[in-house]
Image (spheres, rainbow, N blue to C red):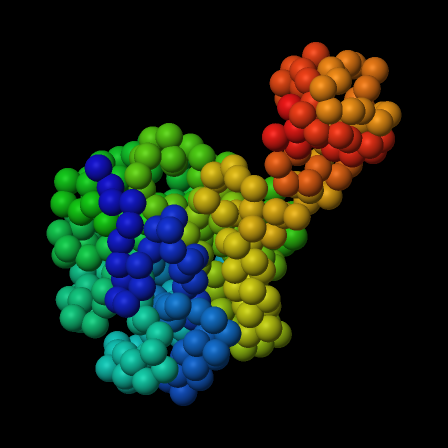
Length: 356
């Protein structure tokens, strides 16, 4: 059983709380610590709750030999001007940056998080993080999932390029040690192609609800703009992760499809508006529509003058707006038909409780 509310740092996460936004800086620091710190500042200013990095070492995440001998498989990496191993080495988050990154996050009051991709990374960052993000590519690395699940910290599990068998296997394993999980729908295509929107498949969030009724839902998104984000929040997602950069025109693997400060601010603003609009699901007459009960509803009105003591017939009444407080509504017609008036009324008057 998973918890329907969790805490990451100072923020509570769940359906009763505002959507939690993770700015995934990822490789957009371009190998420069100062850029990494500047992106933390910008993420905070743009409304992010968390600045996230990715801790990998090229030799511990990819096989240079394997990629060079991979035949017949096309991906966004085919457009890189260097080998996959060289790109990962160039854009990795250097581990000697850790304390400086954490210090910067504390200074601007934004949560620090990372996705570790090897055991050494876990050991080095565990004392700094309040939660772990697990990337989609490691959903089948069961030993790794088990190690993180035992650290007694919330887990955000991305599910890109996986089916429900993969998700169930991972969630079953994690649940043996950890109940604080955010299950995130994800499509792991990083080509920045507008056609990718049709593959986001937000209704998977409904499937997740069926399999794991209490689990907190999220979206790890790589599409342009915030349309998918608004859809996900409508379906119950309360954690949103998107890549973040200061300039979409910079050269690098993650810049093109990332959000920038302006688009991030717009995303947060529109999400907050949506959250207000979603409400609590209880159907009621809202405070701002109380007057429309009078203005737009019909009351039972007289078509002619009537004296005290006279009975009311169907020919004596009609249903017209407005409906002043305490007046009879059309559905209450049986309460007035063939009843005797105890006051004089004139044509056009509405019948109110106490007239009969």
